[in-house]
Amino acid sequence: MQTEILNAIIHRDYSIHTEGTPVQIDFFTNRVEIHSPGSLYGRMSIEQLGIAKPDLRNPALAVMAETLTAAEHRYSGIPTMRNAMKGYGLPEPKFENRKNEFVVTLYNKAEVEKEAVNTEPVGDLLAFLS
Image (cartoon, rainbow, N blue to C red):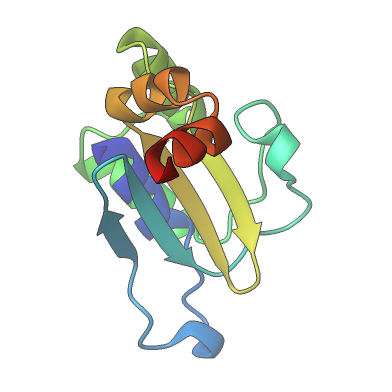
């Protein structure tokens, strides 16, 4: 999760439009959501994440993170996330470009098992009500 948080800090919008809005991390029983102020920057689309070279919103932060931390090399954050999730047998991260924020959702194994077991919620509801 370190990669995801570092990406959120590096790529967030630091303009006056998001002033005072922090990166937000929400923990749920079945997932973690990382909300980063500002939507995708430049010409990047969700489908291109981890494949195409993105425009950098904060190049100084990216260089500083590469130099001063154990951060991945530039443009490798998304592939690193995907590989880590796959390595643990978890679903790929979900990326959402919402109005004024970018959200990464990381699901845990419990979510996958829950979806596999609960395939007919209507039938379960009817059985419960009987």
